[in-house]
Amino acid sequence: MSIRPFRDIKRKKTRKIKVGKVDVGGDAPISVQSMTNTLTTNIKDTIKQIKQLEDAGADIVRVSCPDKESSLSLKNIINQVSIPIVADIHFHYKRAIEAAKSGAHCLRINPGNIGSKENVREVLKAAKDNNCSIRIGVNAGSLEKKLLEKYKEPCPEALVESAQNNIKILEDENFFNFKISVKSSDVFLATKAYRSLSLVCDYPLHLGITEAGSLTPGSVKSAIGIGMLLNEGIGDTIRVSLSADPVEEVKIAYEILKSLNLRHRGVNIISCPSCARQAFPVINTVKILEKKLSHIKEPITLSIIGCVVNGPGEASQTQIGITGGGQGNHMMYISGLPHHKVVSDKIIEEVVDLVEKKSKEFKNH
Image (cartoon, rainbow, N blue to C red; front, side, top):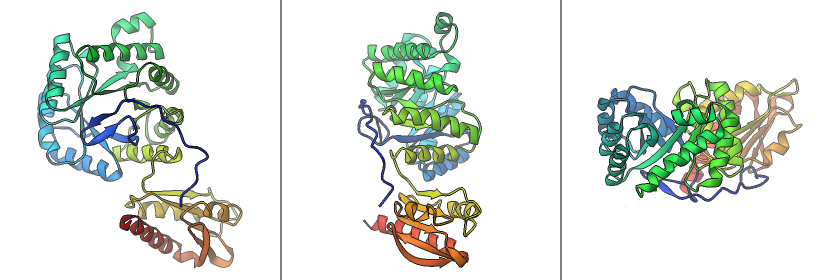
């Protein structure tokens, strides 16, 4: 049992490509990405962070390759992780070739800023020879000079034209194994660009509000921008960009997907903000439960409501629920039905036990 959605979102059908073992586009689930912030040449720390991101639920991880030593370090890194790795390349086409030969599963490039057509051909040859896909990464902060002169400033039309110009470069070389992004730190600029691009191409779209900011403001901007597009059926893979621990990017990405009923992972806690009617300390209870249940990967819905006003109704829609009751006795719900009572100082222990049992049931089936 899980929360019933009011409607299912009909996604736009796009081409399907592969980033390593992960399908992107078509009927594939919307994948979650993040990016390391370690020095790539610090192989030990980079591997550690990649594994942390994978454990948090990332499907794909991007690694920056600003110099030759970094792109060559990829081989060592990729041999020690199981998640697909995207090499982030800017300006230096040789870094892209080195990354592809080192085993990168995808290259994030802007074909317009890596030099001549011959350079692009060499990069595409390396990508083909090494079964490597490409992300065309258009960004409002690094638009081509000609487009800035034409449009006077970054705007949706400029981002889309840049994307189309770069698409043509790859198509002219008979390369079609790519996805595209048209990012901006401005929510409205980015969403309008993605909408326009979605109308004129069927390549998979990588969604993101770039340079969104620190944890709280960045999460809000990303949820609004990415959420609006996903709600319209636009988008095949997402990255939340935060000035924070990259693991937080993955957590927020899943919260966006869960809120739209597009993908579920881990415990989805429905909880009240608490008020004078609460029969137990809701806020602290939720805070503790989030930590104690963070290891659960199976999709489980849990309601924590402090009183009987909305508690029974919310509990009827979740797999496990608790509603605050009088004299320190609270009703525990299982599969939407009242099951047994629990006293205040046993709530944490009881809920954790029930969720872990439900998690084991998922695994056994």
